[in-house]
Amino acid sequence: MHIYIGKRLLVAIPTLLIVSIFVFSLQKLLPGDPILAMAGEERDPQVIEFLRDKYRLNDPVIYQYGYWIGNVLQGDFGTSLRTNQPVLELISEKLPVTIQLAVMAMIFAFVIGVPMGILAAVKKNTVIDYIANIIALSGLSIPNFWLGIMLILLVSVKLGWLPASGYESIFVNPMRSIETMIMPAFVLGTALAATLMRHTRSAMLSVMKADYIRTARAKGLSERIVILSHTFRNALLPIVTLSALLFGELLAGAVLTEQIFTIPGFGKLIVDAVFNRDYAVVQGVVLCTAVGFILMNLVADVLYVILNPRMRASL
Image 1: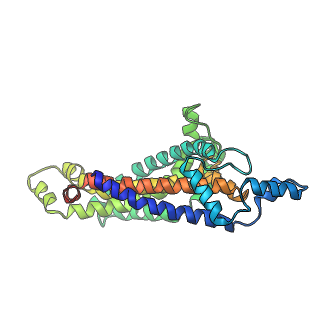
Image 2: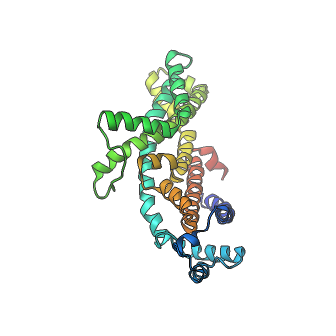
Image 3: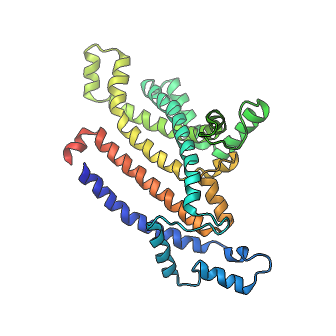
């Protein structure tokens, strides 16, 4: 197992290197010049030149990249050009918000998607199956931003049940934090639930055709035990690995959802950084999300090996 994990980590290193080069190169294509904004309205040439030297923008691009990646390896992601705040500090502030949103979204996805998938598989080709598939297709088709706006109008404006926007730290006011996160988490969770429902249904149908399921029924076991203890347990493998990948996508930041609900997470941070041409923040956030996604891929691979005896035997 350790050798397998080590090999996966070795594969991740060149991937991260390519991502870092891509991120550093792509931000150079952003329109505008942040130094002109920092120099103020007068835009004194001496001030502009001083700022360019300070942030090494006069150096060749290859030297700029080398300087940046060298600092990153030491834990220094640079300083925000707009707020003069260390990028690592900004990331440490926003990351818990995104993790909380991702966890709550996954809870909604599991609560909605997995039972629907099991029910659709058990009731294959019935009205229940068709309704579950229609709901799943709707969850995949409805844009998150539209669903978010409709929920704000209905739940917050009309009914007044939940706050329309804003965020409160879970460490300061847990109940208020959950209230502000329920709607954005539900918006994200519905799309994930649709994906989980389809995969759960397919995995269940595949396992239900196995010989040991027929043997379990032949032994006289109740249908509930056959479905939950035998079928669902063996169908968990693709569901768990898919969940790890979906969680990695959520860590990348739900840009539109966070913007609509004014959630100060990674998505809103990177949008603000792009509009303000804050290169250091864009680089730091994208690199961190890439690391998070790669780590969740590694978790998915490890879970697959742990849950699959045949994979463990082949290592």
